[in-house]
Length: 413
Image (cartoon, rainbow, N blue to C red):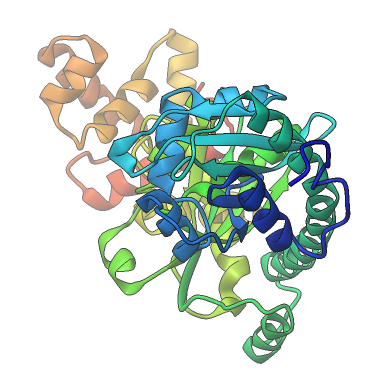
């Protein structure tokens, strides 16, 4: 081939044709990926290869363990920051051979990557210039793919919001809409809402990168609302039987923090359902989990999904009933008035005692008082408040009123 001829200074009918041309020019196998490491095209070059390339072609995306290794070794950071090709030494632990990689860019935005496996010929400085030209030739094709992808994602997001808001009224209508969008609905699903400390619209590209590259969680839909990331995740029966909380999401949070410097501050999951007419319910349940966790952070610090909230999931309904038909708990009223007049703390003592499962020793330790002091206070609580602390019914009633007041934002005193 003429050295002065630029083989990339022309239009290509497809990215497959471009991949084949790069392979012919550099005499090595080539893969082209999008910005989230999904395989777009690969050369038909038949030669020695490595397991990472084989797995990428079979799975149509780069294996998660390879992506993780590239980040851990600082390689992805170099690739994303460099406007020049980056030479990568083999990482044998994940089956990755020596490579030359070039990020495909439009101004400062990364559209994808070209990877050249050095299996047949070692690549020198001359290959760097050729690969830069190849990346420039790929830009238009990838921009076209991104426009198409965004249109598909917009259709998927609109469908997702219709599910979240209960806009679709029958299961048949949902299945028909999914079929029109060529979406295969999982048998089981749940809604997860991840909450961040601030608005995340400007972090959408990094979030989509994490959601797309993780292969531990099946995420069918996602959308952003202010500081919340809303996900619909599919589950198989085995996952449903084993998992009651976020499971692999802890790994996702850790990787997000390490790679991009931010991660969710909290999260909540709705129940698992098999009928997509119930997506709105699962969404509302996930929001309830977040609301309860905000009001009761200590009590629910290890709770993430709606079913494991226990009696806390009934508190919003009890609060709504109390607002419609307000009835003040006379025991709490009397204790509140007594504390106000005598600068006492009987109300707080009662709350700690009930929260300690009526265990005098545990409550005394939590209050930092002697057991005899607590016993005296409990006697006074019974006398002043008119409550029988040996009655489970009375204690449960008062305990729930404490929780409802807290959910309502009402102070104890």
